[in-house]
Length: 639
Ligand code: ADP
Ligand code: MG
Image (cartoon, rainbow, N blue to C red; front, side):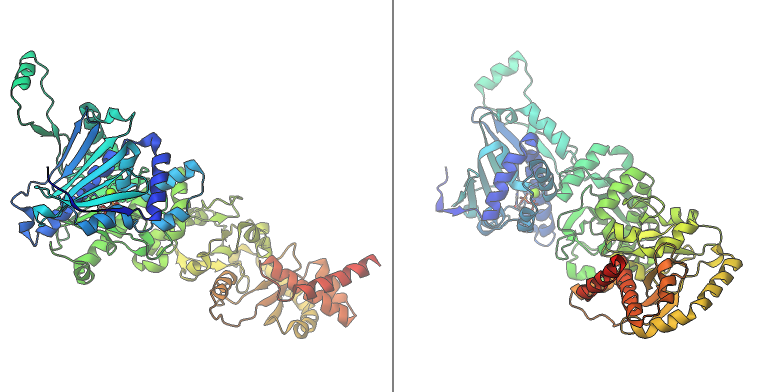
């Protein structure tokens, strides 16, 4: 028994305490996952050692046979998980197992709702890790020695998972980490060979290192006698298949195995939505296994949040979160890329310069887009995908010019055709429904679905039965400003420019419109000076059927939504005035034309302008003036 020195007691960081409490209480129904988490960590530790040993082979200390060993003691009610991986120094133990919460813990905790079932789903996404040991154990001991450190420089960490832990220096002959779980009363079932073996097979079969367990003794009478007399060294055998999953051929890997592997690499414990596994040979040689998660991570909008793939070179783990291999708009993809073209000593800096990285990035982007196109064939599944990741994908057309067409096909919109808020219409659907003679893809952008749907600009489209896409996400105005056409059909914001429905309107209709416009010329001349301050022009329109007037922008003006976003962000926006369009058929416009009293004419004109502004989702600059004018007219009406 070695003596322990430099023993101290430290408190867990507040966030760690909260996390521990939450985990123990919300994961109770899925407690067996602790084993997967600890094996996953042991495997990470073995990979890290192999990586560091590329440059410093001494770290192997003559033992390069990396493995994980699980043992148990029924009497003592303990289960141990041991690895001969990289191990931890005293500082590392303190940092990783106690004081510094995993990055993102604080923001994770802020996302909790207090609703048990929702929160336990969230914790699944967050990844439970080492602390899951406390779901089944009321005391956890960690004995660890970093590879290369002296035998006397080992560390013993111990905690009951409440508020604090102790840490002491000790001796450990073998490098790496041994974790001893003292099972809680009622959790004795885990100190059992059959139970542990089946859990290893269920959750950790894909681990690239052998997971060893003591060979079952043959229950023959002779054997029993023998073991009583001579104490034999136990024989161990591997319980898992111990080959890196992505190196196996597709046909040999079961769906369940793909799912478990996903959980191992993503620290997510929900199943993935779909995946794509590819082996490519030739000048660019790589294997990739890419997953679409089921849920967006809570930090998807945090630019600093870790993202990227796990990078391997010739099956040797190189780094986590290598973010050079996928564009930003695909940041939600998890997975592994194993390259044969990169050198084993790549660093993040080298990655930035290596031309193979660009090639891989473009190949992997295509893989992901193909995987999504495939997913899109299942409408229901794709709808679920779109809900989670649609907004991120909308960054794609601008970021990834080469794949623009592919990305456009993956976009989904709400539209006047479906009559519900669901974003389910693809551009291909839209084009297939275009009216004879229709040349453009029409859309409107607004803050919300109702404003978009009831926009006066849609009136003529409704009358003609032309579909209009209804865009309401914050990113939409910006995204549309990056798009020009889809399959040769240009995009047209219905609130911009002069309305031209092309051949959907007959020559006769066009002629008649010109006539009515002529008749209202004097009205336009009267309106211009009255509204001059706020509009750049006044003209007659035939885009309206029910509303008296509307506001439109010039084709190249910044859209209303983008304007608002930029203003809110304190940015300067160009000072452009909209165009005021009046509906010659509307009784209010006819009445306005006949109004002889100039003061009343001006009031009515201003009210119509303010209303057009409101209908477009705008905010009145002077709402009080609007109300005063309106009330004046109402009083006259009742007089
Ligand atoms: P994660 O695996 O997501 O990083 P964990 O909570 O599972 O989070 O583990 C926290 C950290 O503790 C790991 O990142 C690692 O640095 C360290 N660690 C855990 N188990 C081991 C081990 N067996 N060997 C070496 N380091 C370990
Ligand atoms: Mg872990």
